[in-house]
Image (spheres, rainbow, N blue to C red):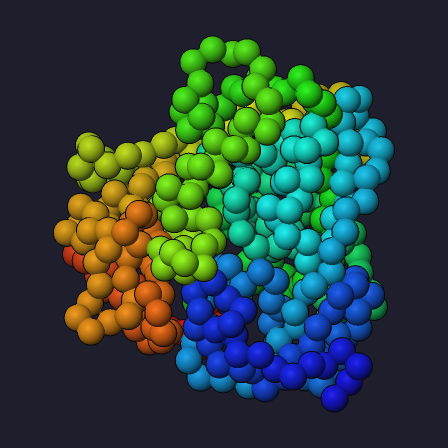
Length: 380
């Protein structure tokens, strides 16, 4: 056992879906240097591997993982000057809790990620799937990431523009049935945020305004925005609570589907849909060495819309709280997109429920829902 290796813990104790046996090996990295060392050791041994942060976007199979799991436990926030007036940069270690970071920024009057309050997981995982909520996404404030892969001697800095950030995706994400375009691990993340202090900010994005119930355009305190978002997420069972089985999930198990406008017209008109376009209540961060005097125009992808997968599930005849006979897995009673472990459910039970939902939606609407969590040792 190396200095970083620890007794392996069953993954059902470390993931919010509560599935998975103990892996063959486990290494804990509490600093960025330890993270790099742990990964280099694993790569030198030629082992199968994956990294584990908060375990909130991971669905692990029942059979023990025959490889190494590297737990990212590094924390810390470093404040840096921004080249943009009225803004500040934060360099954050990958293992830092995402919501802990949001609380940190709100308390100091740093705006740009407050609508993503309550999202579980770690900062290092956030760019991998371009986390977002209520029209706000991390790509709006992300400057760069520090990452390491098998081809590099150590960490390298990669600008956000090279990460292929899109709707819940990046070149780093392991999509179901496919390998990531770049298999690398984030060591730290740098964000560029607006300094608003106690003045708050004017909210322009329609999706966030609807979620907050805003009518006018007066500045609102960041603390108020965070409080309202946390209340909304709690009502949907999207805040982790040991005593509430509706929160024992990976959040939204299926992605809201991105489809062509032509296909969307085949769906019932009552199905909620939104144009795929950026929230214009954003600040685009452009590296100074590539700035030529003009900001890039935000353009909507031609002919694509996002449709509500929760609506599709419920209108295929599956209601909140649904479970298959004798199964310990069920849809949340609060949110149709969340598959939950009601106590001791196996990965096989959750997979069976997921496949049933996919089949019903596909039969009814001709659309195959795609899972959002990273699947390890699981087939749908």
